[in-house]
Image 1 (cartoon, each protein chain N blue to C red):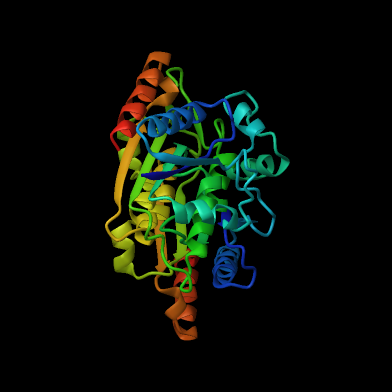
Image 2 (cartoon, each protein chain N blue to C red):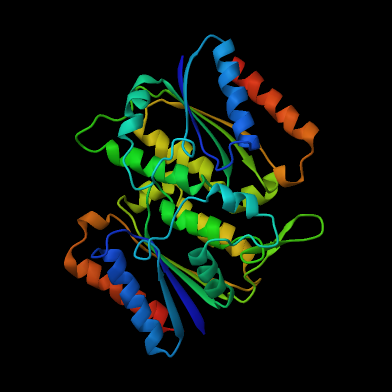
Length: 170
Length: 195
């Protein structure tokens, strides 16, 4: 599989960054080809287009998003990147039919219960709206840690292990 | 009533701005104290910075002057009106960024002694969302109206217990005739003029 891992967090030492590293490592260990990017480290400008990413977007067959869920959805910088991606797939450009897998790995400050109450909008945006411009039968996976604000180091380590395990059999 | 109208559309001549102008004039006409925050017009930065993230859980999370000014305005609000084009089934990125960077701990919500989230916008009694959609109403049902959920559920959880909610939607905006658009503006005027 050819996986393009897209990470979004302003802090390069964040738990999200650790999740990204662990996911990429596990995918490589399982024999997959991996390209990755970090929107903040890249200095992605929300108003710019995604031309710089289009090569990897067309190369991959799996898109992996790694980000913290804020206000029930993707952080604004990733939201902007997804908007620009959608714009680049206009009527003149073919849809991203090469993307057959959409994998999301995300953390939530609040509990699962609160997130369900809020409607898990981030999950729908990727699982439905983004999926709508990928391969017709693209499969989605959702790997989430809830209640990170009150988690222990052991909880977070267990999540990293869960991410590695899921990526090893993706 | 102190009303804050938050507008999120980069196109200064588009229909979103016409909706916002109608909303403002209907609210002004009823004697409300209206502040319009035109996020794109003001150049509001969508992405939270590294420093802002580091400050998020500190006693002073608002380190950007524009975010701080907006937060001060929202803290005094009794009604919030959001006007935006639904994009990828949700709010535009700039509006998402506004929620993240402005409605920080101490403004949008507060953490209690067990680090659980509790409402911060307890003066807000009315939440209004007005959105245009490229797609049809049935398409929106398939993807869910995620922008509406972010505002009417996630944000709603941080307002007063008896907060009223209103939603006005215009679907398939690209296919609407001038008369249909005008009719929608009239609906906006009636809805907001009723308070």
